[in-house]
Length: 527
Image 1: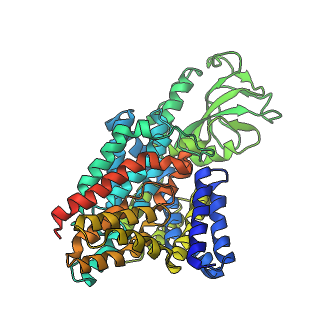
Image 2 (image 1 turned 90 degrees about the vertical axis):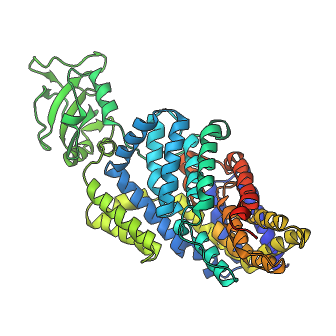
Image 3 (image 1 turned 60 degrees about the vertical axis):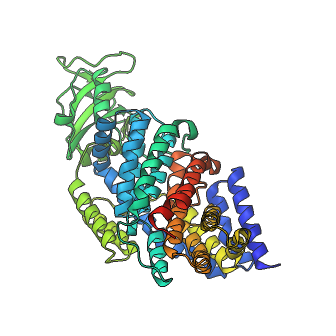
């Protein structure tokens, strides 16, 4: 059987499996390298080359950097700033988060921006009473739009700039992309803010990672139960905090007398207050205390490390984990180190002095060496489902190019247009790019379509610049499926999205991007 037919058959099977949602997406993706090898489209090494791709390793590193921002309270601080300025309304939050994502994507990368802001958006959404699924697709879309602001916003920009220079044109300036990027950023964020509530699904993720708990909210809740005032400024800080514990059944603490001001025997924590289930009130601090029973609740205060060890004891059960509360303290322990590492990473990525994957690995190493994270924390912070999905889908793009299947699609569509009006040729190129971009990475798609665009421009004796810029814009319109771009996959699991959730909000934006590419781009970069 012809390899092109096999490639199309495999592509359709993968798309059908994703769309029907009968199998977990990660299982469908894991079957792709096996099928590529079994059908002979790729060798064994090529079928699993995605797991060694620098992009996959870089994304895993970015998840670890994002965890460091959460663990040290940087995200809690940013979340408070966003809530303070945007309130709790989804529209205003989408605007603020969207512009932050676009600016960050222009500086580092789409993947880096989403990885850094993902935990912040989840925390902000929960505190605002909004399901994260209403916020995470707008985050990914805004980052994709932000990639059009600078030359280094995405590898696609670098590719088309180089091809334009090699094809008789010139390279694009570093900020020249912003001529089309700024309008698209405004339109993208405005669209998701205005219509996102209608077009985005209400989903709940099957598995929620431990997020930061707000110490202020916990303190207010304790005030209704205990006869003590717990304030974030006095009891919560980078080095110490408060947790609520329950006396476990068969605990060695049962039968001991406790009163406010006492210290625990091993961790030297201060007992702030005691409450008994069923009493509905705290014990009187003026008495000699009470004898502990199973199920009693106690507030204890002390250093975070001591609280972690105490909560891990079999004698007590932490109502809220101390690690979750510590993550909610704005700019907590290690925040300065994380910010220093983050700024250094951004500078290195922006200058391009070191390959992105090496920058990511150096950042992870610095976080562990400076004891911001332990190796175990770093390993657990990676969304391995997203990593496996991306790694398994990369070889499919390789096979689609190597077999000539992508060329068949591009040539067939352009044959319908011929050498008619330049706008029709531009429209055909954008449609090919969008269709291929539904199932391939936008970088691979642009590499496939770029030679066709160069040939069309040469045949029509037109400038290559509008064709390359239109290709960039349509390549950024990766909104229709979760496999269109890594950031769509990165938000899929935290948002609880399904394969078909993306096109509802993505289709209108895709039409808008194609319209801009066909009608607006030639006005700025004439034929």
